[in-house]
Structure formats: C-alpha cells, structure tokens
Length: 97
Image (cartoon, rainbow, N blue to C red):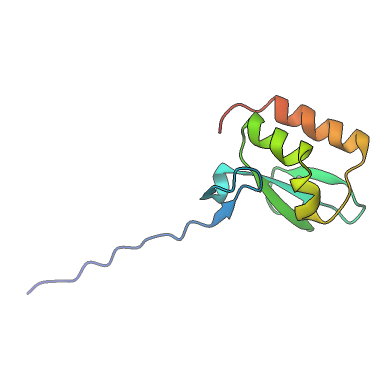
C-alpha cells in the first residue's frame, strides 16, 4: 500500500523595490515606513505601523529611491532635509543588492 507524502511548502512574501522594480522576497529588502509624526524611518523589525515602502539593500537603489523622489511618492509625504540626510547616510553604509 502506497502512502501519499504531502510536502509542506512555506509561502514566501514577495515585495517590489520602488527603485529598480524587481520583485524579491520580503526578507531581502529594507522596509522604510512613514510614521504618524511624518518622519521616514528604516524599519529593521519590519513591523512598525505606518505606510511602508521597500528598497533593495544596494546603494544604487537607495540613490534612485531618494533622489528621484520615488520614496516620497510611494509614502505620500515630503521628506525634510535632515531626515533625507539620515536616510542617505544609512544607504551609503549598505552592502549588497
């Protein structure tokens, strides 16, 4: 008598980088969130409340996302100068992509 073996396949959440438009597993991207105070922060825990957007951990995608205004468009906000500088510095320290 043959027994059926069921394979359990875990669902992998996919997200799109707002800069390069590549669809990747959520864990491979960096989440940015617009907080209730209007600031844009890097969401390391990926669980903060607020409107979120995803970028590849590549300096090129961070450059495109921040300079071209794609992040502001996606998060529906205007990023202040000091907040923008913090995000640019975070992006410069990234290695990967």
